[in-house]
Length: 253
Image 1: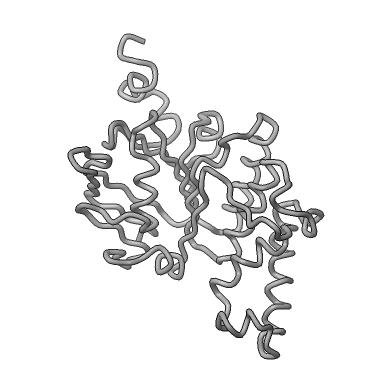
Image 2: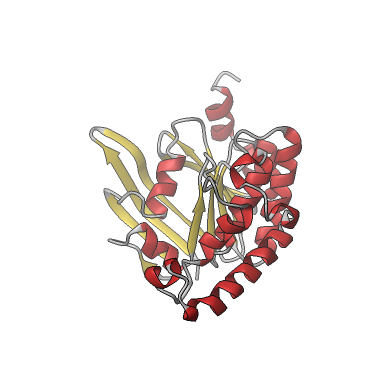
């Protein structure tokens, strides 16, 4: 059974249909890319999957669970995590503390107990710290643990963002334009980070404009155009698809 199933999904904003009858599946362990020209509906699709938006009609199922009526935090508790195009670090906090925030989604201690550092919370906080350091080490940025997260370079912040997302123990990770704002060297580093994430067993779906990254990384690619599913297949199949070529380069090209 597929980990993620999207079935006949629609989302309208007034008279504008941003997502129109989109269906696809994502198998466990896959890296799947969602591509398309600007305004194709990619981020709206991510918002529908992660429950930041409710669909006008259609269904999203995660590991067999219908997400109808679910809120974003409920989707997260089921094992879905998401990053955003604009990186958001918690200012005034270290890299390690930023990652530890992600762990608290799975913590047993309540908010007040953690805030006042009651005795029962201390063993769990030590475990959270240990786990967060291990994730930073996995992604090659453990040496930054004590740095101010907001002062890091974009590529380093992406690594911290990935570590924070992994701290939530997701089974599905949605990456919204992970290479946005990065230089070529940083893009190569983020490509390697995504591979490391996938190697841990996490299923990855990414929206991305960097076609070299998409073609190198993806097991399957979904192409959107004006909110509709234009094509789906392997990198080789999508690269040869005349409809995809026309959407990106124009019918004349």
